[in-house]
Length: 268
Image (tube, rainbow, N blue to C red; front, side, top):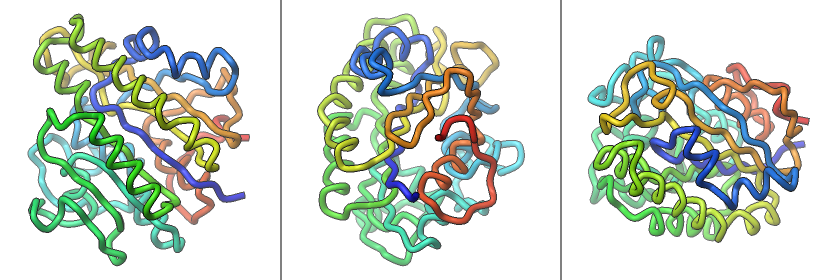
């Protein structure tokens, strides 16, 4: 049975902070309405390469998107391509690098910030280009897309956690409180999303270290959360999803043809 999907990528969220600072999400886990898994991000632990990994299932060493300054359209098939080819509606409220990967490069704010283009992989979009763009506004952008367009696939990608980490480091009140703020914002939307029939995946591209950066092999840089909520998930504690399986798993939920790995144990 096909499902609608919301994928939330909380940029820069380390697993341990997600585990102890996100009380609303953990309330879902505690009531067996969600499950939390630990993923290890692919290398390098950088944003643009891992957007590509999450959304195409292809690790950076194979995609060629090997650092943040590789600014070009992806040559891979993304979850947006598969959804659109399957006749589904796609939308994203996300950082402008996502638009550059799958819609148009370079990003031109006047043309691309608000996208309405049925012919593009991401048909409906609100794209921002300042790392301090408020998460509250970004979640509202995503909800506006959901209400106005009823997308089958919606990406919501806020940046304030990562921004706080780069300014203050992993072991800082600012970084932890940015995660708590994202949890509170999610609390405003999750029940509505689930009641509307969406399957929800909440993850991160990479973590953060105390040097206020990320690009290495430290657990705090590579370990990221995956929360799953919705009737299609098994909640199996033994499941071991991989970051490269997120694209295929979303496609499996959407019920569209795809050619990527997915995590069978994650789903019923």
